[in-house]
Amino acid sequence: MADEQYGQEAEAPKAAPAAPPREEYETIKLETVNYGTNNFIEVAKKKAPNGNLFISISKGWYPKGTTEKRYRAGIGFPLEQELIDKIMGSLNSVLTQ
Image (cartoon, rainbow, N blue to C red; front, side, top):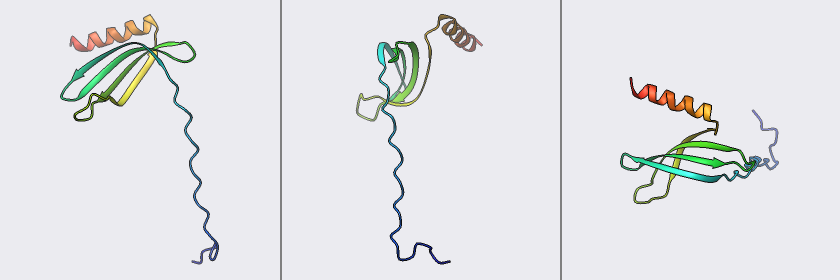
């Protein structure tokens, strides 16, 4: 099958658009729970640029020989007492059975 662009320079693939800048969140309070040889869970109260407060729970690891945190996954949810009570109740329920 003949190339339709034979004798012409092929068009270079277009670069993907640049990712938007990451939003910066103010950390109000942070607690880190270390476990295993180099793993951690981080629980934090943060403030979004729009002023909303939320809870962040992240899982990560420390590269060998450092104290630098690398993150694997995380979840965030609004700082609403009813939601926090439900999550804490569910956690306690799971742990007692």
